[in-house]
Image 1 (tube, rainbow, N blue to C red):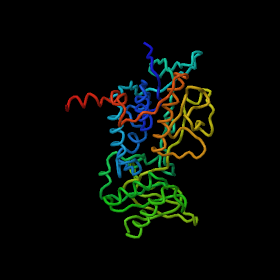
Image 2: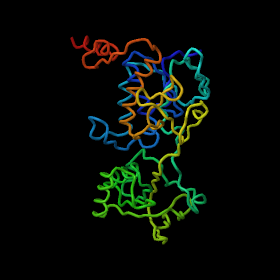
Image 3: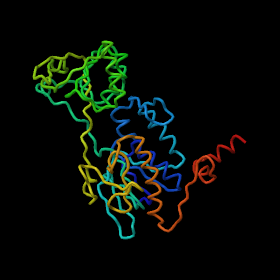
Image 4: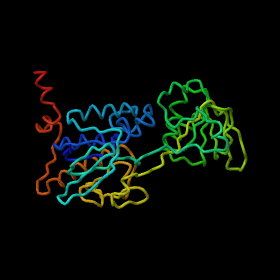
Length: 347
């Protein structure tokens, strides 16, 4: 049976989830499709316990906690959620709507399509080193699902971006010691995080090393040390109990690359009025899109989702006037959010 919906959202990460909310406020029905077995995207799959510091009104919130709050927020709109499947067929129809089919045979008649697929079919960039394949080590990690497993351990953290620095700061209090190894002296992480890391270095809780991984040393089943090729072309041995690799994600658009969209360097160009792609009725929000001044922040994705929702509304009904209504005062918004029912219970 074909599912008729106002919007198919490809990707159920934080931005995809918030897109449901923004569409719901405008009275539009959404269906989420994601290749993962659960909602939450990178936040749930790669770093559910990672602390996030730049979500408004939350000084600190865990990645999975943020996902859980977003799921709670969209509950009044009852979106269709289709997990463990990816879009395999996409067709723009003559009537301005779209035929979308997933790998499990779920078929949609969609008024619009919103791509919120993050970096696409993302996979963490893997550690590659001489001897690694022979060791078949089990102490190499690409995500943190239980931070307590690293308590009292000597950690080697590889990377120089936000994830590497965030986990260095977060685990410094429970680890015996952390060695942060990066291929160059400059870091891509937020300057404030780098400054805090430098303070931990002065306190002796963290050691910095610059260089590339040359060889993995250990016994079958585990790595005991990594041999680094330093910037001075020397070889040094760094010992550790657990190896955490945060080299980012390798982007792969997957089937989306065959949709005849304009694509630049594995990203989708959009306008900044409604975040529409080169195909009318197809929008892109979050890390997968690109435009002048783009910043890959969850916060930016939330903003994009709000404007994309109005873009979808206009695409579905070009002649209708659009009104901006506030959730604090609008009776229509209260009804859509279920606030009226809550008021009745308390009266």
